[in-house]
Image (tube, rainbow, N blue to C red; front, side, top):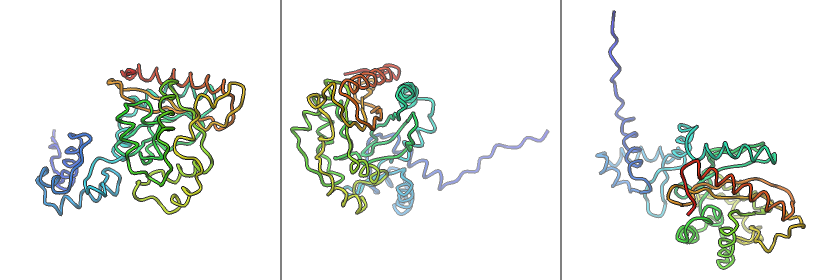
Length: 296
């Protein structure tokens, strides 16, 4: 019998890419300049620059234009989601959301923040949602991802340079935060202009928005937070135009982890809003419990 020896041929260029990604994976949340990366990996700066340039182009790394540093990008999250399909809070959320989606024949989603991007993780229902799609996590986008987190997380988001010019009523925003924390869910009504804005911003870096978005901002007549209904706005018997409802899940430390949404896209009564909101919160609580999280 002839025994074929195991293939041991290595690819040095590929090995360098793997080492660089491992370097970032071992230091979650950290950012590094080119010199730090080259020194930490024992590579020449031109070699290191070639690698990070390609990884940035592919979305596997993100380059911070202000500090000229690099960190893991959204493509790594999307790849991890596919590799780990069947595991994690995103998949748990999808299973629970399928039941809610069938009940209302509506699109439901689960998403989370990764760095300064919002990432779509799971969806259920008739609507087409591109998993792995990202949005800038900076005002005016991302309020619901800090509503149920710590005051510090809300403050950090509020302090981010806005992705587009906005009017900001901080006092109103804090009322929105207080009410959403009390009720456990958010009720949002987006104008057609607002929906176009979200669509145009998908996958675009905050510092590289197309001119169409800049022009569109001039058409927005509502300031940040005014698209969210407060309790006093919702009369039980009167109908209200609702885009979506949103509720949070929490991780093991009690921090906000995912945002689950239930699309509405029509006018429904305040009483119906409360009923659907309670059902969405119940789903979010089930996802929190099954994924090993806890409410703070």
